[in-house]
Image (cartoon, rainbow, N blue to C red):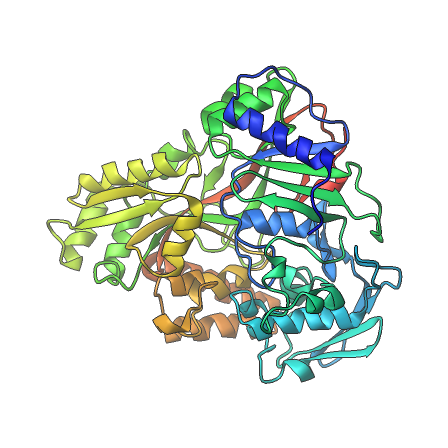
Length: 535
């Protein structure tokens, strides 16, 4: 990586001073820089084959364009990006993309269809969690070379094993980070022990997009700079500084003082106090992210579906929605978010309420009339602790004694991905506006063995496996009639209210507090567009 220039050293120094001493004199943010306060402690790499966190995904999506993109104003529409057009064969088995011819990487190397094909194949070859995004549509290691074809420098063909719905494929693969164009020549020059540049991408983004990663200091800040060779319209603000600020109160102070343009993790009381105050706006958009109580089905207690259902009646959905989640989420117990194809409506998708008598009855039937002891782990999101405490208090009333343990988000992810927990508070966001996006991760489990390490499947993390449910998920995916397909998803949601592996709590909003001087802060629920923001 290029050594940081003096201007970036100044940006980092300013960030460090404010973080250590948040009561220093205020100063407006630089006019050419988007400055954000965000808890970014979950970042571990910028390799699109490996990342899994919402934070890293958002940053990477602002650095690396994909074959197609979501319309910023309408997430249900797919628009051109690296590919200027596409077409599906009559049998539905081949999707052909025609790429733009004027694209270059920050290195100056031209972007070709071979770079996109190589980038997608390396995801499968490396075999990290994101390989599942391609493997579930037939792009497995044994057929990947035949499945992705490059007829010429600007044409890419994807050959499927089944006729999947075109809109789903465009959203699930072509608009996904696995379909970004990585600079093959640069990465192979940095390859170590056959890692295809994986180690290099820990702190680099060698791709075609509006920004590139200039610097990442773990636990401190991320700096992005505009890509001078970008094929599209240049970002209105050429620099982005994301300051790691874990505490919501500190984020609020920095925003109120004008030290940051946007604060991403404000607590409900902060949002309530800031909403409508001079110089600050609260903006939010419903996004396809679910916040849930993850119950490890490998634990003998939570292996019992009646216990899992009892836990759902310990959730004070409305009480939490009126308080700690007032700005952050809406009650939602279904695994399909509102706004997705196949989702139950708002009423039917939320059949639970706090009901201690029903929880006690289910525990009696499950063989736990005196309750049990268990442990709940959770991270540093501002609403995680009060939700955990609410669950603990309600559980105690039916004899379930929950010990709480708070930890950094990176540690939480590590524990859950290793199945080293009994229950945890987590979230999961799909990349498609289709029920399959959640069904394929929250319910479907290709291989439930511990050594399979299917860590990008929340179902695997919860040690949940049902051969019948796997078949139902695949049948819904391949159902050709849209009406019949929707009916299958409705039935699956109702079934999961009783049998599902988790207690799903809320559908989340993308909420932020921002200074009024910052214009065009755009979020459509699927991603945030840094390049559109201006001052």
